[in-house]
Image (cartoon, rainbow, N blue to C red; front, top):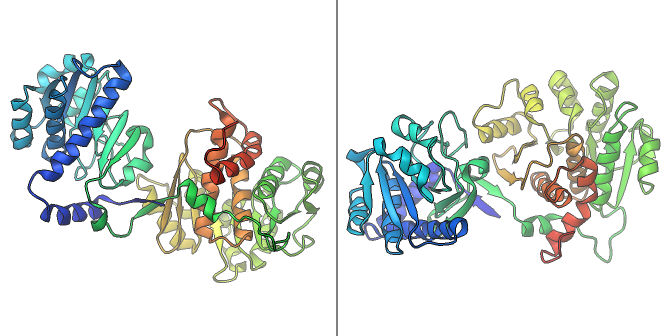
Amino acid sequence: MQGIWTTEHLRAAEARLLAATPEGALMQRAAFGVAVQAADLLAEHTGHVVGRRVALLVGAGNNGGDALWAGSFLRRRGVAVTAVLLNPERTHAAGLAALRRSGGRVITPARASQLLESVDLVIDGIIGLSARGALRGDAAALVGHIGAPVLAVDLPSGVDPDTGAVTGPAITATRTVTFGARKPVHVLNPERCGEVVLIDIGLAPELGEPDLRRLDGVDIAAAWPVPGPHDNKYTQGVTGVAAGSATYPGAAVLATGAAVLATSGMVRYAGPAADVVRARWPEVIATGSVTDAGRVQAWVVGPGIGTGQEGRGVLRQVLEAGVPVCADADATTLMARFPEVLDAREPGTPLVLTPHAGEFARLTGHELGHDRVAAVREAARKYDAVVLLKGNTTLVAAPDGRVLVNVAQGSWLATAGSGDVLSGLIGALLAGGVDPWLAAGAAAGVHSLAADLAARGVPVSASGVLAAIPDALRHLRHPGFPRP
């Protein structure tokens, strides 16, 4: 499991490490890592390192110092390096002296626009973790002149380090080099960060518990229930699905199919789309109502049930069942409109809510704002539930404040019906006894992997994502398995 730390915690950890490290040693270690990545980008984009031209955008403080020292290392490899000093009075003195000793050039921002349009690589050392808000002044004016790949030091300047928010001019990096630990910006705004490369500077012993966590394939594979020699269809988990309607039978087919392909021992469908579901998934026990469905170990409720009186009744019946519930789509809208429906839930019964941004606003009574992590934590506390906030970066918050992050490989899941597939996956894991927070995070990981496998570089439907679930699970358990 990958840890992610906020800037407050990182600054405290860095201070402890600095106190036990010779002066300047950490900066030179970090700067050497920047120089290595800069050379790699130059070779990747131009085929050569020697004789190439690099511009350093240098602000005040340590990020500027990292860029200057990196420039001095690049000079030793035959790279022409020019530093643009954006705050000359506060430029890192030792780093600037090192660049000048190595033969690097220094210019003012007034002369930098043409340079930025002609170099082979730009190293962004404008601002670091302590800064907030968009770029201003000369830095903001120069962003539009960048025509080369950008290597960001720690984070793209102008992007908030803890929320990933962009409120004005900001850098878009091709690659970001970060030191000691990943920061929230790296997962909350991956489009601005590009590829993130972590350089070990010995910070790990000082970090403590992470503020956010990201599951890797090993974590997801370990969490996913696998039948043993003594299992049967009941011990593997019986998933109930209350979804769909005469108007939206597809929601029932997708949610139910996901529960089947997620290897539930048994899936029971309850709703008006029973005939359609039975025709598509003959292994499903399909009935017309929740009352007739029989015993289940978890329910999925909401996709396509409607937001009228009938849907409200279905939601209440499911919440009264006393088993874990994944509430999606229309169920979240009903909870927002009729909060008293939650009185049917037995205290302490696990509940997973899976809103997109619009549904989240209805549930909480306010828009998301820039700080998505704080917002999803607040919602999880309010509803005493695991809240999965959908997006290209999906956040999963538990009521106790733990947050999982899942970064999709692309935007293939921005298609009708993909949320129904996700809810079916979550329901199957809940029925299998997986902790609700982990179930939501693992399901999000398999969901995005299935989309990536199904898409293969082109848009894909929710049905395509559904069909790719077995391939996604196979890849997680056998990473070397060839992609289709």
